[in-house]
Length: 259
Image (tube, rainbow, N blue to C red; front, top):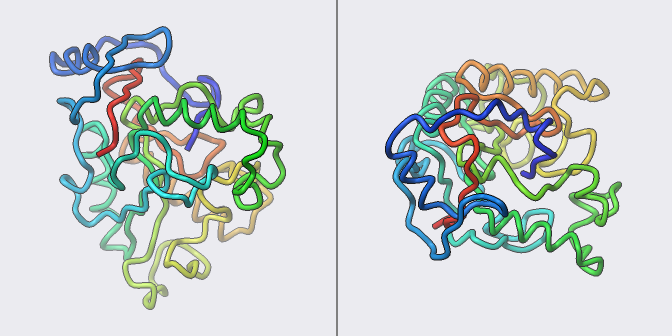
């Protein structure tokens, strides 16, 4: 999803790029205002991979390629319903999936790398007061014009750095749930119940919200602990949002399209 200002997003201190390929990648990238820029679309740069080339069993539900999102339409730069990540992030998710599958679960991914043009599209959308078609589902208790001010959207997103992923858990076999490590009934689509839909702008989406049912709180902490064991940190405002703690490009905001 989106990112609040840098504090809640948990960005660590700036670090030098670790590899020569990283330096080349950063030089080629189109970044947010005030950063490096390049004007023509690029193929996937060196250092990025399609997640399904690394772990084929993961399920994709890329929301910003379609209309099942807070704008109710595709976002700029999403030319295909695919997940692109830095190779280190994808490899860590491979390990997450390897731990999950023997327990009867799988990752279900909503968003991965997000081009800066999509973030700009989000910001432009907030400035159109007449477009409220997705309000009831995604921001029922927040005025659209205050989404930026309240940190639900921002001018930059950690997704554009390539090592952030939005995801949930789903059962491999929704008919066999008795042995799952998660609690409560599954949602009709086979997902584990996390208490709110993906991308709901609400305090109920905060990972550690204490006012939710015990089963939901257990499920969120199960996901949080799982991801932490493999090097991902959670954004506290969004139960679905995880960033690789040792991300390779912590200060680079890319703009190549998702394709």
